[in-house]
Image (cartoon, rainbow, N blue to C red; front, side):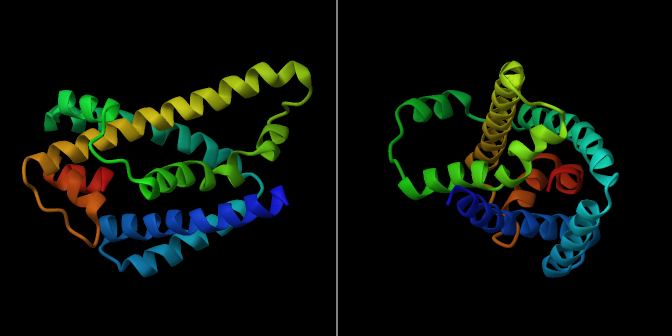
Amino acid sequence: MLTALIVIGGLTFNIGNIGGVGLGFNVLFGISPENGALIGGAIALIIFLVRNALIVMDRTVQVLAVVKVLLIIFIVAISSPPVGQAALHTIAPSHIDFYSIVTIVGGTVGGYISFSGGHRLLEGGLKGKESIRYINQGALTGIGVASFIRVLLFLAALAVIAEGFKLNPLNPAASIFSAAAGNFGYKFLG
C-alpha cells in the first residue's frame, strides 16, 4: 500500500515538475511551455535510461544548487523585502489556509520522494544500523536547505508584490525575478 501511495504521489507531483521545466524552457528559449515540457520529459527519460548519466546528473545538480542559492540570496538582498512583517505573520498569521499548507507539504514531500527514497540510499552504499546517522544527517540537511530556499523565494516574492508589481499569470515565478533583477533575474531564475 505504501509503495502504491509513493508511486501515485511521485507521479502526481512530478507532473508539476515537468510543467516547471516547460516554463523554464519558455523563459530561456521562447518555445511554448507544452513543447518545453515534452523536451524536458524526453531529457529525463534519457537520463534515467543511460546508466552513467545519473552520476553526471547528481554532480551537475549539486553545482547548480549552489549557484541557485547564491543567486536567490542576491535577489533577496537587492529586492529589500519587508522581513519584519514577514516574520510577524509567520508567527501570527492573519489567515490560515489549509489547502495552501497541504500543497506546500505535498509538493515538498511528494515530488521528490520517488527520487530520494530508500533506493537512492542503497545505490549510495548506505545500509545497516551503522548508516542511520548519515541517513538522518542527509534528510535533515535536505529539509533544512529546502526550507531555507522556500523562505528566500517567499521573501523575494513578497518584496516584489509589496512594491505593487503585477505578476504575469502565465508565469508568475518568472515575473517575480524579472521585476527584482531585470532580464538577468528572468533568465537565470525565471
